[in-house]
Length: 69
Image (cartoon, rainbow, N blue to C red):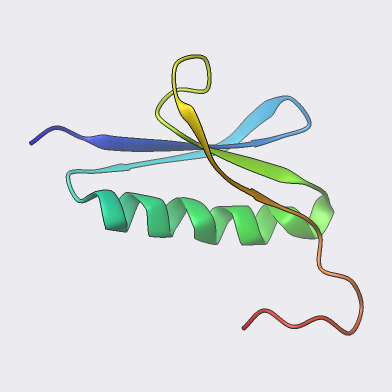
């Protein structure tokens, strides 16, 4: 099997990317980075390169009083 790649974008810039032969592991890592970066503003996670990939997830900053789990 090939590599699964995810990109994390914020404010028009790619801030992180993950890849793994295991799709679940690559997605899990990307979502972790998305939660970290979302502290500073909205984030988009794409499966594959942003130009050819599909939107996988979006995040928003946590509001005071919200919890992460």
